[in-house]
Image 1 (spheres, one colour):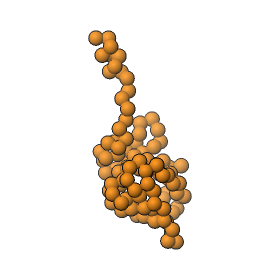
Image 2 (cartoon, rainbow, N blue to C red):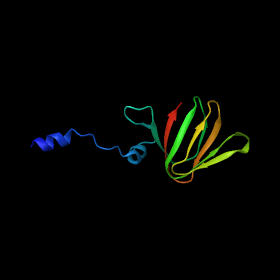
Image 3 (cartoon, rainbow, N blue to C red):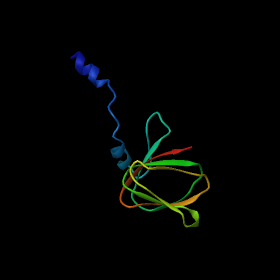
Image 4 (tube, helix red, strand yellow):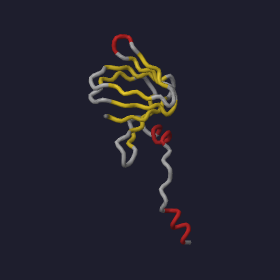
Length: 101
């Protein structure tokens, strides 16, 4: 029927949590410069670009230089500067949205 054909052409909403969990690597959100990532274990990272992150699920401890740290919960975001050496430690599986800025 014409209605079913029309309904097939309507874009479906993106389930970002499922997309993030579908891979151990970052997943790009189509038509954006945003990535989703499910963090399951501690990562030590030296940032090669400025990075903005937003926690979508879980909690994330970010250890910064000189003993400073941030605890990010759902809805919290943080921008980190290029060159920083950080440790990202999820308290459980944590889903983040990130963008190099």
